[in-house]
Amino acid sequence: MTEPTSSPSPHVAIIGGGPAGLMAAEVLSQAGVQVDLYDGMPSVGRKFLLAGVGGMNITHSEAYPAFISRYAERAPHIAPLLRAFDADALCQWIHDLGIETFVGSSGRVFPTDMKAAPLLRAWLKRLRESGVVIHTRHRWLGWQADGQLRIDSPDGEKQLKPDAVLLALGGGSWARLGSDGAWMPLLAERGVELAALQPSNCGFDGEGWSDVLRSKFAGAPLKNIAIALEHSTPRLGECVITASGIEGSLIYAWSAPIREAINQHGAATLVIDLLPNKPVDKVTAALAKPRGSRSMSKHLHSQLGLDGVKAALLRELAPADAFNDPAQLAKAIKALPLTLIKARPLDEAISSAGGVRFEALDQNLMLNAVPGVFCAGEMLDWEAPTGGYLLTGCFASGRAAGLGVLSWLRGQ
Image (cartoon, rainbow, N blue to C red):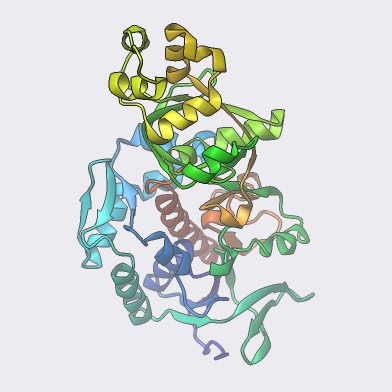
């Protein structure tokens, strides 16, 4: 490991090379601070790059009130970060890197080429030109008794005593990319208030599919449906039947309340509308038409266009006697109940909930229990659905923590 060179300017160590850590490095280096960034993986931004596979969704274009509502109960804590660096500011920042963006039909914002790698390359070039030194394969091990950082490097363990530390270590999902939550016990030992890591933007297991549904339709997409939890407003979208349950973008949007319902009650019941664009009276009228010698499967197909995985799911979940009563069957088509009993494992989740509680931080994102140590990104206790909200929150918190470090350094 190359030891940081002596300099009259303050020296800050950043642990973690995802969007939050890199954004903090940019803020600090542009202010003249000497920045050394340490990451345990062979290269930085690995989860960022994987998130960009299939299309780099960087943020969302919806109006601020709807945007901030995506952070649910943590919206009051995320709001100050986003007011200082919102979706428009993030897009302008990307443009300044020479990367153009466009708004997709869903309102999601993407780089023009849909790729994460060119953005990351341009960003790392700018960081290196501003003096940021990046150390890969350097894993943070905690603190020495005298407060020095312990860093495991290819050359053995090193100790470091920077003027401030910024932790941006990610959550607990996708451990193979570096976000393994190993920092949790290290902070707990220092008296930092933590919330347990839980899967977010994840799939869920049900009570078990029949062999027929599992063998024929595991992996099949359920398109143009609406899903709600009981006593909530339905959301339109699509998801995927899995061998053990259900996953996909529409499920991810509901993952936090589904998970919490399971935590509290042992199960959560989704209500699936297989034909969200048809009112129940029209569905009933279509089913009531004489079907003659046609099978129910052919009747559903000819009258309502219901076939494939949708028809199979209806057979799986609707009461058997509903198929003899058009009104009851129409009700099932419009409100098919699916019971879910557990989230898929944390390491399969796109992101995680839990981590460093905001109550453990001051307004500059510094740990109350460990002065001079700041936190940012997904290791903070917040969550948001996919669609650009996760990345925007990470960028905004990294920037805020970097500014917090500057403020604290000035006061020392």
